[in-house]
Amino acid sequence: MDLSWLDKNGISTKDVIAYTGGEDKYISAVQRFFKSYESNRNAIEELLAASDLEGYCIKVHSLKSNSKMIGANALSTQFEQLENASRNGDADYVKENTASVLEMYKGVIEVLRPIGEMETVKVAGELTTDEARKTADELLAALDDFDDDLSALLAGKLMGYPFRLTQKQKLREAAQYIGDFMYDEAAELIREIIPGIE
Image: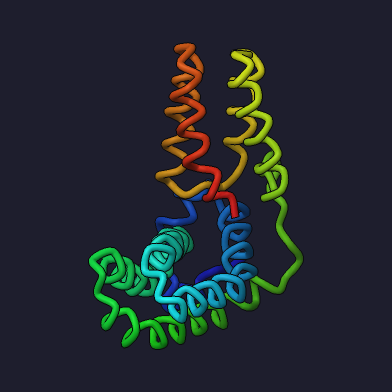
């Protein structure tokens, strides 16, 4: 598939396709980004209306990372500024700039619409959100039972979910802990990455 039209519309695909593991995985990531738009936008608006800067910060942090992962670098930068402002308690900046960033987000979604609305690309070995959540729960249970073989197997399976870079690194660290029989430390890291399964 020729994706050069994305670059012409402000989505930088050059590095992110290699980072995500190839064109199919990139398209799969774009489709997830596209499909989560409505729920993410609604969540931001609800958190803003509730003046929940902590929850808002968590949400825009996730969108910053997800935008960068698909090559929407300008949007990622805008979400980062909202993240920094909300973390620093700058409610005025957040209120003044959220609407314009959400408009930019909507514009990126429109650019991605041809990919978002095409038939879902299923990458071999890639877990769906439901499969990843189930695997993570099974992994926590196996760690609780000190079952190192099953834990290692499930951690390997969970690698099939397209986590963001920081979450993927935590999963690798958890796998290392499992290899070292450090089950509590591994479980703590798995609990940290579970919210990233979305």
